[in-house]
Image 1 (cartoon, rainbow, N blue to C red):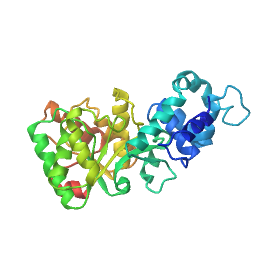
Image 2: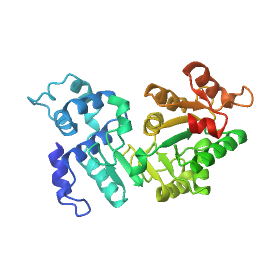
Image 3: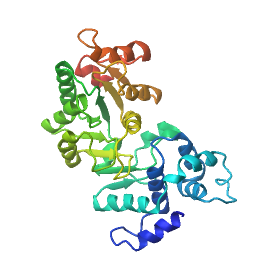
Image 4: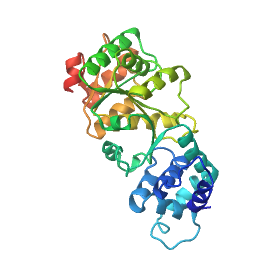
Amino acid sequence: MTIAAVIDTISTDTTISSTISHDTIARTAWATIAEPGDPHVGALIARYGAEAALTALLSLNGDTAASQDGTLAQLRASVSPRYSVNRVVDAIRLTVTGGYELLTPSHPNWPASVADLGETGPFAFWVRGDASLLSAPSVALTGTQFATPYGKHVCVNLASGLIARGWVIASGAARGIDTAALATGRAFAGRNMVVLPAGMGDTFPAETAELVDAVATRGVVVSEIPPGRTPSAWRFQRGNRLLAALTTKTIIVEAEYESGDLNTAVTAIEVGRPCGAVPGLTSTVSTAGCDWIIRHYGARLVATIDDADRL
């Protein structure tokens, strides 16, 4: 049960190009068995390469350096039982039939900015739309799913103003602030970037699917999750880190104290990106997270479009 079995299966499938590289196959395999941002897997791939690390994981015996790595014992128990030749082939087949672009670090459109995530970086990217926008100047506008009318109003003002100044507007695909950012991009013919917490074709929540499809025609939709894999709370959190790393700067428009969107802000600060937050009209539950980031993490206060542009 090795990567050779995947290659043999692919060779008989007329829907899949025979030119797909071994590294791409291996990275797809890792994405099907490991959770996004697993630092142990990331370290193995960094040391030995995706193919050698996967071969070592699946081989009970071996005399390569990767086979002797102490990390493998833990991964064999937790990760290798998830490996399936059919699962890897299905992910590749869905990539081809869905018309998605599969990026690995050797691809010219691979965004160099994700290297700042170190061992928690993505194994591969699945993309709809213009992959070159992954490296364009961009602003992450994100926040709570339970946005107030004030928060939505601020998001629309910031997004429309930043679009007019040439910025790509990045967000997730959640309700609330993300939806406001996506709707503004469509209304103002802006370029959006959407980071999905699930595989392509599985937009969550379903009511944002139309907005995400619109982004794919004028912007870019990206996921580190292979097609066919479902959302999970962990993958939502890991998607937040990816949003911060892919963008030039991050602005939290509205967020509660325990909002998962604060992870985006913290990651942005940790990887050296400018980070801002919009203060609330008063100290309320819906803005407590923004106030906390400003007070305790040094996020800069964003009150106007000029603040956002100069961040």
